[in-house]
Image 1 (cartoon, rainbow, N blue to C red):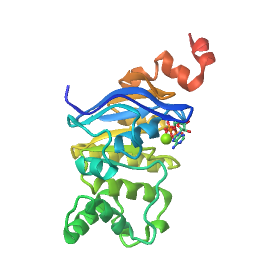
Image 2: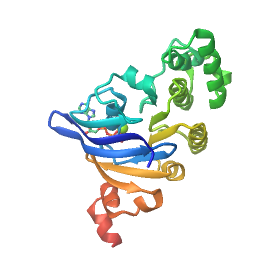
Image 3: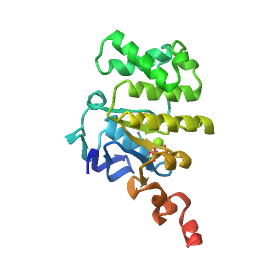
Length: 244
Ligand SMILES: Nc1ncnc2c1ncn2[C@@H]1O[C@H](COP(=O)(O)OP(=O)(O)OP(=O)(O)O)[C@@H](O)[C@H]1O
Ligand SMILES: [Mg+2]
């Protein structure tokens, strides 16, 4: 199996709370892997550990076979992992184009080239007409797309996406699904956290499920949503008992 990312038994404790608990999973090269789990399951913390924003207490994180646990976020970004944030916070006072250019500069390319690539990225996202708009003046959904653009501008091999359709209308969600598919078609592997089932089910080749920091399921979407431990995590004991 060709694994691009291997997470091996990583843990993170915040005071008395075990937010991530010996979590292990792999992301295969070229797939869209959905990461599910109820609120507080540890999904964003797992992203923060992979991207180096917080350090794991234990375990290994291998990207392309190389250990990245303990590396700084900029080093992990340079190695080919980009992320979007659950709360999009563009650089206000900079235009949409300049926001995407920030991602390009992270690669160390020259200004003219970064600018051209950033513009092409905005075209890909359907945001070219907003290139000169202050990022703060974009709609919430356009801010989400901008965030995707900033991540893509770093030219990642692996993209971590955290709740990219939160608050989006159904048509916006559909547009984002198409964009994520196109991203994958460009050869970028995607690990995506999403609560909107329609999105995750339609998009993911495979899904993994976390509960209380632990991995509780791994499989194709149609099978995972029927697993008793997954139903229990989302709906509680009563539901599983009632459906049995
Ligand atoms: N920096 C922190 N300090 C203390 N506790 C934290 C910190 N970050 C996260 N937590 C806690 O860790 C647990 C997991 O949080 P996390 O944000 O990873 O969950 P999540 O699965 O992303 O949830 P959601 O679906 O609501 O985004 C929660 O109980 C949260 O309150
Ligand atoms: Mg989260």
